[in-house]
Each structure stands twice: as C-alpha cells, then as structure tokens.
Image (cartoon, rainbow, N blue to C red; front, side, top):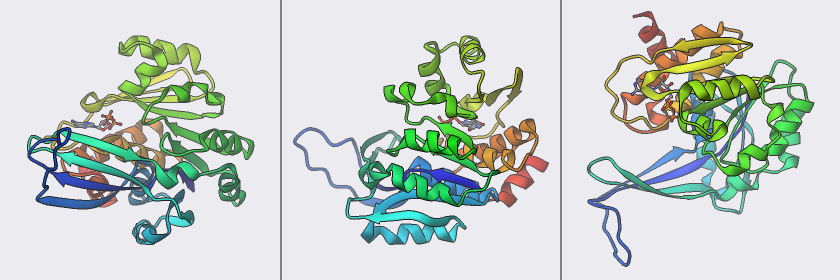
Length: 294
Ligand code: ADP
C-alpha cells in the first residue's frame, strides 16, 4: 500500500470580473465548492491508477462528507481524523482570462501530530511506501518514523518553503519536484546544473524532476532517464503534478520498470491538463491505458 500523509482542502472557487480591490465588495455570479489539497489529489490519482492507498489526514467534524468522497474513490480513510478546527480551505478567485488569486488556510491539516503518524504506521507492512507533501504538520515525524519502520519514503516538497531544507532529507528514498522546487534545492534554474547538484548531493535516494510540457527527468542509481511529455492541447495545468505523482507511484511501487512508470505518469498528466479543474481532471485508468496504447 501507499500510505499518504496529506492535506485535505475544500476549494471555494468564485468566478469574478476582476480580483477584489482593497475596500471593495465584489459580487460573484458563480460559486463552486471542490475537494482539493495536494494530499487528497495525490490519493485520488493513486486510487484511480489502481494503487492500494491509505490516506492520513485531518478535517473538521462537519465535513465528514469529504471522507465519503475519498472512500468512494476506494481510499482507506481509517486514519482521516475529525477535529473541531476548520478543515483546510482555499478561497480562490478566478477571472475571465483564467488568472487566479488564492487565500489558503491550513486549518486541521496543520494539526497532524507524531501520535497520529505512529498510529497510522502501526499496521504497515515492509513493502509499503509512505508519501507526503508540504501542506501538513508533522512532516519530520512522517519522514523519520517511516524510515525507522523500514518503509520506502517518497516526498513531494510542494509548496516549497525554506523549512524543507532543514528536514531529515536523508530519510527520503524518492524526491519528486517540479522545476521551481528543484531550483530552490539546487540554487540554480539551469537544468544541467540542477542535475549536477542532485548527482553530487543526493546519493542516498532517487530524484524525479518534472518539467511541465518538456516532460520529466529521473536520476536513479547513476542512471538518467528522460521521458518527453505527450503533445496535447493544455487548457488547465492544475493538478498535473499530483496526477503525475499518483500514477507514477502506483506503477513504481508495484515494481514496474522506472521508464515505463514515467511514461504512464506523463500520459496520465497529459490527459489531466486537457481538462479543467483539479481532482475532477485526474483521468481513470482505462483512459490512460488507451492513451498509452495509441
Ligand atoms: P507541477 O504541476 O507540479 O508544477 P509540472 O508542471 O512539471 O508539475 O507537470 C507535471 C507533469 O505533467 C509533467 O512532467 C508532464 O508530464 C505533464 N504536463 C504538464 N504540463 C503539460 C503540458 N502542457 N502538456 C503535456 N504534459 C504536461
């Protein structure tokens, strides 16, 4: 199984003529409430890709319906706890040109603690993987306790913050970063120099750098695997990275060859960018299989 310690957010999306100005009260004619958070998105992508996934997270007591949505996707939610703190949420304004402005409140996501981490790892099996992002608390506990339990650890440091660099990075078996996050680690935005940085400073684990429409590079035991992106008409790249991670890990944790797992992940994320939205743009396995076979 993949045990994902991740955020669960409610995205409140308002379609507005322009971003609200200081002192202004702005009416929005359209409102949508969507399930979001990198953690939840990645769990949904994993589940759609056919992985056995256990989500560990925290939401407000009144938002138990979110848990039902995750369970409907086939995700084990035994360790999704309820609290009196508001669920993590985002207030998202979208303008007619598709630009967005976001206010994010971490809420219950920031209440994940060492005790919860221990409890969730208690029934783990040696072949399980642990996954986490940078949208919850207790990340240090997740990394160290997963390692102590002898599990493989995948980390997606998104959104990237300064504090990531002081985490026990030696616990990470697989780092998955986009170009912006890779540049933060390497101190350069030149791809060759980034690869050089990871080659020299990251011998304990594997690294995947996703490159948007240019595809992906994986550095693995002295090996370099590059896979181009599929050429598609992108309409909304939200959750491209989450889809990639879910589909990659679903294949890789079942010992699919790395190159093949990367191709599947590129296919799934190419399909995701052709559709509007976050979680609802993550394609089903059938669709990915057909796309890869073409
Ligand atoms: P993030 O969403 O985390 O910033 P990327 O932008 O690197 O991550 O996208 C992740 C993956 O999604 C890429 O490696 C690529 O396979 C796919 N992807 C992203 N944008 C496009 C695009 N415009 N066309 C095709 N595939 C894309």
